Image (cartoon, rainbow, N blue to C red; front, side, top):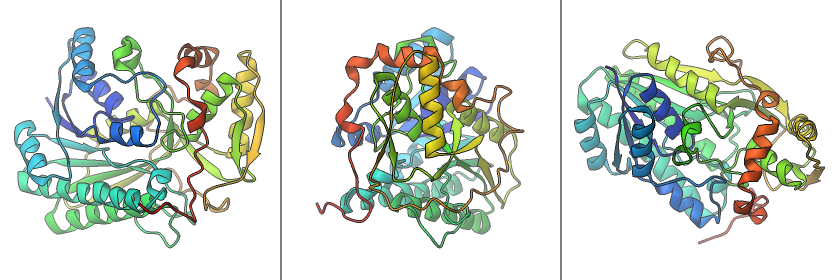
Length: 370
């Protein structure tokens, strides 16, 4: 049985991924320091659906499926801690999805920019040294955001989008060097904006909910617009709304990771896969969300607001190298995802929605100075 260590297994992608892999018969271990829950509290944000403690999640998953997931509350920036987890788990595959995932969070102030680099860059370095120390044929899979910048991928860039983007590029370069220097094998999955709030596994019980955010800092644009449409809050389109986004439903994102486990690269090489299903401008996305909400019986306006970010509308995404042919057989588009039931489920949690976090206006050109 293939042993998989999911670093960041309590997170938005890490938790449903861990459940999916365990359901498919992999021996899954989660490592997470739960720090994102603290960051959410600091930003005044919380997931729309209650996210239960990790020990309850794991216990309920075992009860519902008969499948085991081991977990360690451990910090990847602590090298001793990560060495300990590697020694105990003895992984064949390590999936790294523990990076601080938010560009706005990294741009809020100096402390958050530093924290992003400490967590993401130091974290991946410790993971690389742990893989090298293990002296086993480990396949490292690192999940990164896909940043559109002059049509380039994450391996280099002359035009960065945020401190988060800068950290992502450094992470990939460190992985490249480790493969070159130590003969490691790695896959970097550069995924478009991931959206959606449930998978087959998360539907089994409320304890298994995914950490679905709708706030400006941690909520992806599709997730934010979906919640806004459900409650009749105008869809906040930044600036002219011409910026293009690459989009990938969470179920398809997980399928891409699972397929990458099956297709291991040769030692000494790094494989980069660009993964998204569709591209839409913010205006196009808003119009789709508005129409799907109308079809479901809800009315919402589209509102243009000043753009607090420094971003360009031009440029293209790199061509997909692992998308439509390698996604699950059920390829989910935004239109597919925004069903009547989707809006209904959001309204079931209406009392938990805090509209004050939808527009927090984290500025790209001026920062707080803690």
